[in-house]
Image (cartoon, rainbow, N blue to C red; front, top):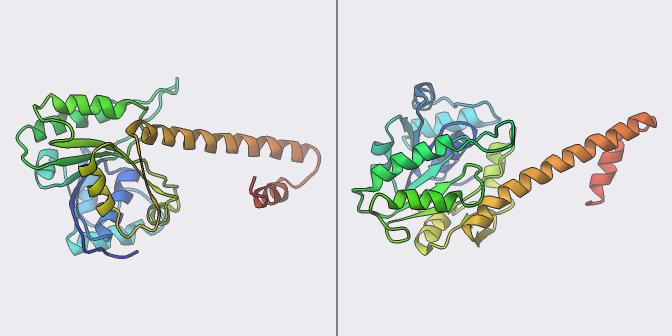
Length: 255
């Protein structure tokens, strides 16, 4: 991990798992990060140099960046956005019992951003890191346009899915398979390329809807692998075969 010279002021909205890790890692890269959350306890923890989650290395990272002055938090989104170049949305979108995502927190954030940009003069890059169904970015963009500002001229909404695993989130942040930027905005794309300078991974640019869908594809495939491994394990145990050895050799074939 290295600190870069190019820096932005970034608002990270939502200080749960993805938000806490993203805020700490961006600050480590030299950016000024302002975390925003409606949960005052999470805001207080960040300002005290404490993480809102438990994960390897996160406690020392948050403490270090808080002490450096690059990381702080506030419940006041308008105040944070007024000072920021980039807004990164990391709010939760949990699935209900039918598998449908709950986007209520996302739309609350959209309404607040709409109010904040109405009088804004600078371009704002809005990055959606939350897991959302395809088409969400377009709807988000249309809502922000109700402020009187124009998409691509005054702001852009970008899909930028994360690939973090619990237990290795910081390592995953700095060593992703690739960094995906889903947007047609050259201004937003250039900003995110600069934001992620220093991350040793290829940058892939694509349509916003592709960016939104890739996260679902990845989650579905991981679920499929878990089910497959469980089924093979059950068969192995019924035959008195060591399932761990079978899966280790199977994985080694690159299948």
